[in-house]
Length: 130
Image 1 (cartoon, one colour):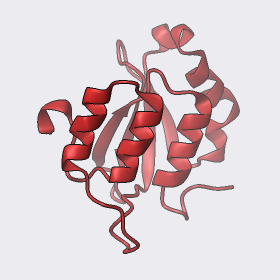
Image 2 (cartoon, one colour):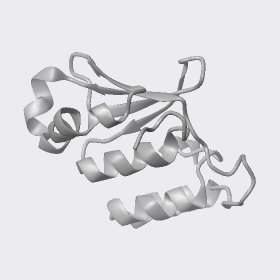
Image 3 (cartoon, one colour):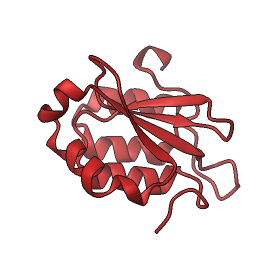
Image 4 (cartoon, one colour):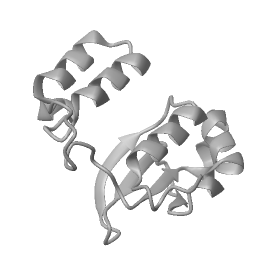
């Protein structure tokens, strides 16, 4: 369902995670229509080499969970940098090994634990430090 922003790159387990945080059955249903079944092969888990957490500095006060992540947990992820952009909603811009933009994920309503868990799962193992 490209109209909703989903592509076949979404894993069905990602749709299950979406269902945990977003209580919109129609949106979750759209996700499941085009997701790829998880498997044990190396292509089953899409991973990235780095990320940019982009947010508008003037709107940070509206996002205490994101502020807490930036101040207390961001340093755990050496390949994640914070970028301030005027009027930008909070988002993670996921990067490939060449530093090119591969995917953008809005994180407006995420808790800092969700951000940390997502980065641990989606950043390549040699990128996320313990």
